[in-house]
Image (cartoon, rainbow, N blue to C red; front, side, top):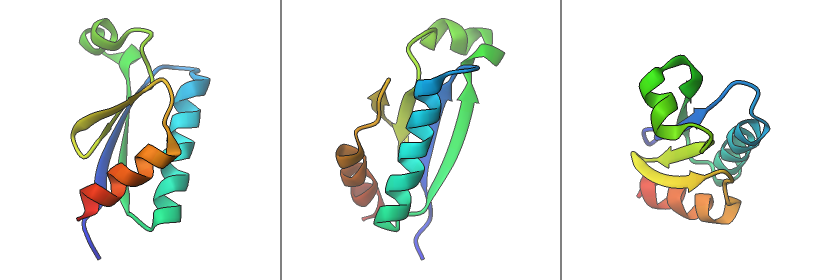
Length: 86
């Protein structure tokens, strides 16, 4: 079994789009059988992150690379997870 692909999702408190992004990542990972290690980072708890991301969340990194902002495209995520696993 391969190592999980790191996924970081920058979120905010009570963010519906953030919840949707996390759900999409989990669903696509399950569908593609690619293990992921999801790190949810709430920007509201850190002044520097809040300054950097502000309202521009969710911001998603896949395999340490910026991948999505606001919405996660399932098809593109499938490609990114598959590429990261290879």
